[in-house]
Length: 189
Length: 228
Image (cartoon, rainbow over all chains, first blue to last red; front, top):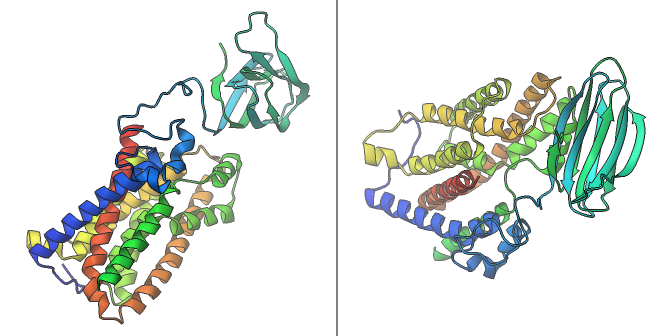
């Protein structure tokens, strides 16, 4: 049913229009969109127009082929470069303690806010240097609280995070919100 | 005439280049708000919904295609309402029932909806198939897909269960407000342009560009799908 006045084009017009639409789309896709979004530049036009700069922060190489694989010498799977924002709920059972950690590079910044559903928890916010075998760790802050926020710039490569101890007789739920460049380790064991 | 075509081409090009920097997801400020929000936050969700629609060029391109040849206010209202019904149903259902669909695939289908509309506006189906597919039904069905697209954007975040329904309704209402604002602007521009002879002369070019834009969008989303 057609209750509107749509002019019906001739077959040749339709064919020309469809071909033109496809050619234009393919050209813009490979020349502009791929360089800008995915740092692939098969035509080289993206680099000339400076579009590859838009997606350069995701990839250490500024010139790439279509067959570019995602790993380079500076970028292994274990070393995150993109900032993420995460929220997690952690249940600390009654009378127990547990840890929740993040793997970070030296001088990485971790912004955080955590709160409990009521009861304050003893906590030790600390970091363990990568490769350490002595059990050494540096405590950034130790206290008992139910609502803490702030940020820290970690002093070394390693695993950083919280140890919470629930000294009450009911389980306590911690809601933790973090942002920064890290790899979530979570509970180490 | 060559000048007008060139101008249109460069305007579209400029738009595409600027859109490339905006990935049509949810920006960081919204992300942080959604993560930390607990409870009912009616006006913020209303605003987020409106903002999402006003900046949602894929939804808007489809709507432009739909109303391109609708001259009577009554027709505009009917078709836009069908689209609204479709996307509201799947937005609400998708979030409340926690339906998991791949966002890239849905967005690719939305891209195809734009290609469909451009082709339809050229009388393509009438010419090729000898019949016109039910336009109202098509708008409703594509509306369903657009709604799933909206839902996936919200679903990226586990936000608070408390007040979920109210916030979701606020988001939906915001989407409609945003749609209304964007459509009003489009209608004003269209009605000015429709006074000129060039409207019909350029309807072919415009709908070809619409098909092209839809195709680019589909390719972009499929790339995202296959790379992740």
